[in-house]
Image (cartoon, rainbow, N blue to C red; front, side):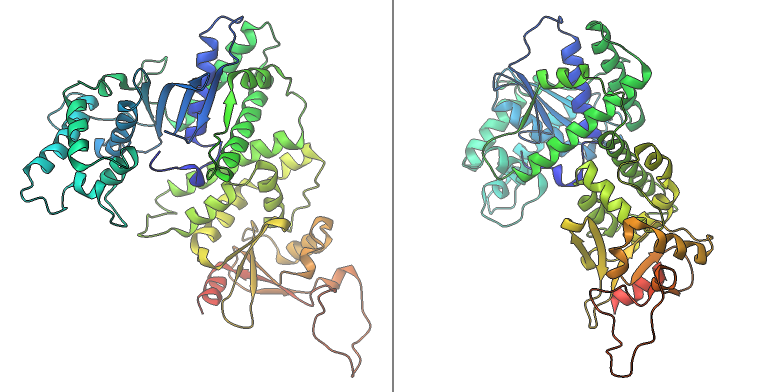
Length: 476
């Protein structure tokens, strides 16, 4: 696969959900007694996902969650999957999209549009005389460090072939002497649509879970279906993270269809910390997507985006890890580790959506310090003395004396009171307070004592810092 998207998405995103839906659909289409031990799902290998039977490819799938119907947005993905199909006879190809793909102007379908794209690449190469390296095919075979996307896709598919051979293979595809294009189609869902939006895919997954439970005469309640869904999403999330860690290895990580069935028939109705963290991660990812799709909050930028870089860090964490990071983003909320029902009620969606995500968007991602062993993200200045800032979900409008009491009395945050002197919040003024003001009183410091804070003592002062102040400090 030319472009592995796994660093930028979690099992809670559209690609993972579509893969899960398609797998459940295949399981439900077969008799209950069918031996499924040889069937498996593989994510992010040749394509976004694929189905294998005893290690042999059955189908390749591209999944694109673009909020547009413009053909040009999908042309690279269509080229990529077509080239993979050309090397794998009898394998089916599907493209799954959030929006319906419109064909190019003057064409009636996306397959003819794709065929025209490939023909244009061929014509450009054949018409170049002399051939001085400017065509897409020539760039695909060159040793240049960077290539346009179509050239990179061709190079990935045919890494050792000459320009002449590539031109010949592309011609076979266009003339259907290689039937790759005829095996490719936009996936059509059971409602007759060749697209499925982000909100509908959850309902489709739940429908297939319900069918699977009923076909096996298992208890089929709305709660069980909902909790099985989130168990599946956590399972997919772990798979993607493991896949990303093992990406450099030769062994591919797969999920067997049997494993999916066993996960479905397990009773997940007892709420636990794992379930809570899976639900939370989906909610967290949804709030980031909501922010990015809100024109009043977010505009696309050239180059790397602070929020998307931070998103990549956080959504590549396993659900329980992300939950621990969230606890550090909420020093004013006592999120007890084992009281799951109470935790569920205390998740501050508005604080995430309107404060934390705003901080991650506005502050320079290059200043992020990610301390994994502590499940903590801070921003650090580059100039001395180094100042550290931790982003929070603390909203404006809450009395600051109340906030500081909540922070000081939060037993889960006592380590925090020794280490991070600045908490970024959504207020307008710096608010200074002492962690020692409530925890205990101290004798006055003697004349011969060092007045500086000691590493093994509480910080003398902690500041609630507005976003704008933190931004200035980090840029100086």
